[in-house]
Length: 119
Image (cartoon, one colour):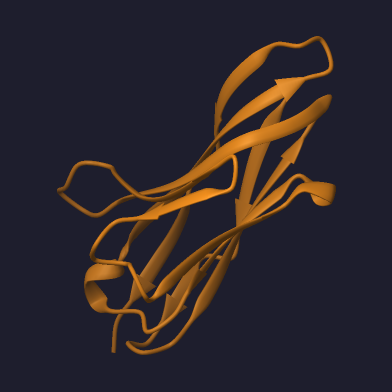
């Protein structure tokens, strides 16, 4: 069974940093795409950044502050978040396209991790 597990969320003050991790486990051959989403209270879930075959995209409100990366050897993705603002408060989730050892293409979601930015 393939699954994603996120970690690294927490409570920080404005201006501080956090790094989220998204670790995939199971019979994985490769992870060609990964994205990070967030859902703030009372708002819809939004895609904030993705990496697909090496091509990276960012939403405008995180560009220059957040950095997505992926360590293929560890089947793990990261979201480095700098200069955090109160409006970044949300549940952050990772989603990945995973190719298994049986050549199945799976779209897998993590459970989400809460990030709270408050003074």
